[in-house]
Structures are given as structure tokens and as C-alpha cells.
Image (cartoon, rainbow, N blue to C red; front, side, top):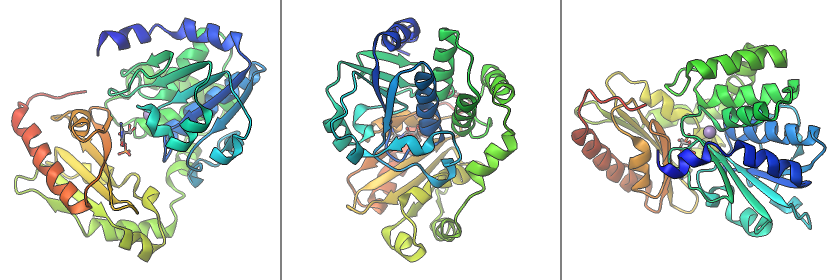
Length: 340
Ligand code: 5GP
Ligand code: MN
């Protein structure tokens, strides 16, 4: 962690003073938003709205169907709704880099009086005027939770379920190494305060899979390749597969986690052919290799055990390049090193 991040971790007071001072806010998150992206922005939206602020959320991509049970999800607007709205403060959540909110959106909304960046990615850029970056937090939602705690306002029921969803998603349902004792304590508090059934939240998020996605999954799994030493596994999804199954690249979300679960695999790759011929990459590590560093070599980023990038290269060439690079990382890292 560099000194910039250390300083940023103490920015809660500064940010709360800013929230007090201004009235008009806009929130946004990264393209292809996931549970933490949606959970963190909705919880912050609800918190600020309860404080009497004027808040609007603008996202480049639509809310995935499996998050459409969260309070206020349908208040999330798209790029075309910005119109003449001029926020004083823009808060970007869980994005890693400003570019990841989408080019059009940043062009329409920026510059603003103050830009705030709330994130937990190891590779997060400090692009805000105020940066609340904590790579030790399980999720951006956990940082929003801490922010609300610093304000000493009770967490509302609606806010609690959004925060819990973010925590649950980014810890892989509390299975990954980022799920600390503190994360579990926060989750327990949110369940009590929110008075929701955690099993129902799980079912909404993970058990609303369209049959088309399962058909796509069967196509993707057929492409599985494992290196001779058994340490690197890869799969790919193509535009032809999306056409055949009636799906889009969003349906690939989560597949890489299944590849990572293969016994003996250290690095898992899932690559996806995008309509423009470039390739979206998801990387997972079992702990020996820091995949955020690997992704950085291809202008991406993320966390030590879950990272990604976009490569301007056909998908098969991307697999070759990434597999080669991953093998170098494995060769360079002592086997008993386990990164967290
Ligand atoms: P996923 O593989 O689930 O799409 O992403 C895993 C992690 O890597 C997420 O935390 C995500 O923010 C990060 N990530 C994925 N794609 C990119 C990318 O193109 N650029 C950066 N900087 N991070 C990415
Ligand atoms: Mn996150």
C-alpha cells in the first residue's frame, strides 16, 4: 500500500464535511456493474437522500436483472437522463479508474466542483479531489458502511440490504480471503438492522439465472484448456456463442470462478470476444500470483486474487499472451507464498 492510500484511509471526516456542505450530488460506478457497484451506490444514495440531499445516480450500463429487488434500483438513470443536471459533487464508486464509468458519462458530467472517489481496488487510481481508497476493505460497500458509521446516523433498513448485497457479492458469499472477521461482524449487524433474510438475498442474486446463460455456460465450458502442469486454466466466449444462445458478454460474469475451483489450478482466465474484436479478460488467482499485477501489464487492474483487463487483440491471441505471462509469474513466485 503506498502512502497516498494510507492518507486516503483517514479521509472520512473530510468527506462527511463535504457531504454536509453541498446539496446536489451525482453518483456513478463502473461499466457492467456488479453487486458491490450497485450495492455501494444505492446505499450511499439512500443515506444522502435521508439527509435531505438532491441525489441522482447515472450509470453507463443498466442494472442487471438479479439486482432489481434492491430498494430504489429503479432510480438509477442512464447517460441520456443527465440533461441539464449539474451536480456540485460527483461521487464515483468501485471504479478503479475514472474511465471505467464510461467515456460519454464522464464527458457529460465532468468537471464538477468536487470529484470524490470511493474504492477498494489494490490498483485504484487517486483520481478524485477526495479519495477514500482502502484496499483492505472487502468491498466498496464496506467503505460506505464505515462512512455512515462515522456520521453516527442509524443505518436504515433499505440501506442495510444494499450494503449487505455488496459485501456478499465481493466476498463470493463470504468465501474469499477478503472476508475478514470484521466483514462478518458488519454482515451480522446489517442482517439485524435490515431485518431481511440473507438466504433470500442470496437467491435473488444467484438463483435467477436465465436458461440462455446456462446454454452459454455449456458452450464456454467446452473450450476449457489446462496447461500441462495443471496450473493455468482458461476458457473463452465468442460473439458466435452469444448469437447462438441469445446472450451478451454480461452473461459471462462468474464463469471464471468455476474455472478457478479446479484442483491444482493457480491462475484461471476467462476471455470474452467483444463486438469490436477486442477481448475482455477476467483473471483469478488461488493465492500464489498477484493477478492485479498481471492485469496491470495489460492496462487493467483489480485485486490480488481477482482482476481484469481489456486487450486490443483477438481472443485466442489474448489467451496465448496471458497464459505465457501467468506462467512467468508462477515461475517467479516461490510456491509457499500466499498473497491475500
Ligand atoms: P471481473 O473479472 O469479475 O470482471 O473483475 C474482477 C476485478 O477486476 C474487479 O474488481 C474489477 O473491478 C477488476 N477489473 C475487471 N476488468 C478490469 C479492467 O478492464 N480494468 C481494471 N482496472 N480493472 C478491471
Ligand atoms: Mn468492489
